[in-house]
Length: 202
Length: 189
Image (cartoon, rainbow over all chains, first blue to last red; front, top):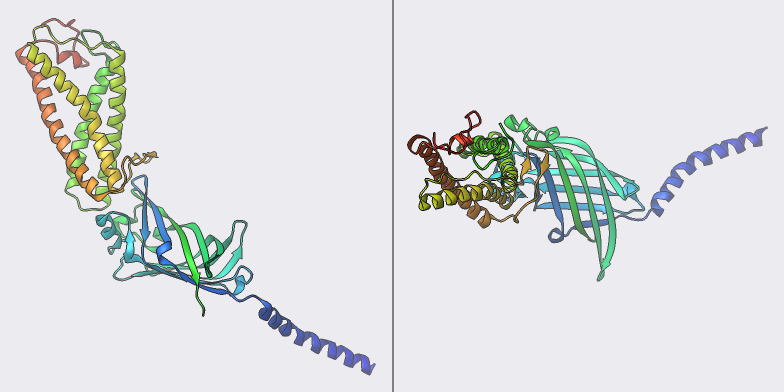
């Protein structure tokens, strides 16, 4: 009876100890993520919106991206994007100034928009980042589908990330006063990005 | 009232197109004047969106009108007109037709150049006629406004002539474009 009891105890001890050990082994064997930064000159961040029934376009010219990613280690992947809202450009000075104004983006009070994701899923077409988008001081959960491919360009590890999603401007309070109406300016805003990232040693 | 034109009188379709376009041009002038005084805001967007939609409507009606004119006889000018009066009438009418196309087209191009695409009452979006360009936009604003002034002048001449025909020459030139007037078979009243 005694030896059997010992054996059982040993087995339990081993089993409880093995759990964390196995997890540690798994983490150690997971491939490291690559740290990417933005190649601003070869990247675009554009938006489309309905104005008076027609689709209009704009872009942000200043934004930063920090992307830690490995297709084989999504758990350790992280994405951080910050956008200088004041850099918006719809090709029309008067409209741009209006968009920067207090009733829309309120750029003086909220100069940046921010997206941070730490959860990534593999999807049929690529990946999706699940994170928090902050615009005009309002934070919302958002899923952003994207594709990602890497290329070795003369010894530089480049990553190409692109995708698009739709946000509702009024969810973030972009549109106060008369701009709350969606009759002439649509609520849904398409956001499309095509980024060239380069890996930087960390 | 007959649908088609005769050699003496405008038919119902030609009259409808004429007066509908008159009404829409009045709407256009009103919307443009109202929008012109507003700062960029929801009200201005609304005014200009309607102005664009109505402009495209006029463009469409002008096309229909030109087509209908080709398929119908044109009522003849009174025999009593002097040759220079005939020429003046022809030039005035030709200019009105040209302006019915030039006004909306220059407006449409203006919108394209500014990067504010045109939609027809929100039902569909029209393609951009010219690429987005600031200098081109300013040139087109000048064009559109100048054409509006020319249109104003030609319309004044057109109305003055119609009134002269009615009150001075006492022929049926005005009446044959009026829906409720009785046909006088192109003769003097």
